[in-house]
Image (cartoon, rainbow, N blue to C red):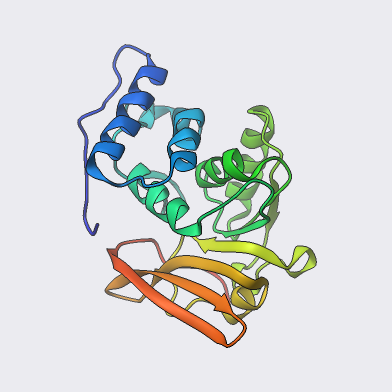
Length: 222
């Protein structure tokens, strides 16, 4: 998982839909996608609408792309893996920490439905642009500018939560805002990072590691 990069799907003819289908086909062939709902969501969301114009031809290459303010949109295979690990169902309420450009939130919204994704972004410009872009594309997603270390308690409990930025440990506030039986997925570590999945149970929190990853560090004061 760590360091995976695929530039083989650059788009020169403007046929983004065909490129998107090819991208998902390859991810399924490689085993990056396990759940049919994840595959459908990735086929539905126009990733090229979420990246800077200068990066559009590479929107369906399987790699992260810069979106400004030293942040990136995650590679599609990473979005797929994390979405699979959440094991989402229709009408689940989901908390996202790190909106970025809004792409991952849109993928999740395709599965859980309108009005069920709550996303917190530290950089005000990203929060504003993501909110506008999501509205333009018809997504009903709640976007807030704030410190993700605190989660979004007003709408808790959530069925699942995930982080798109790395932190030394998953913030306690985020874990506490997920209901019993829910899960939290995110990258953990300072230098070396691992993708972690937490299962919230009545007798505590269990933890699984799903390999090495590389994400931008989480911002905020904790």
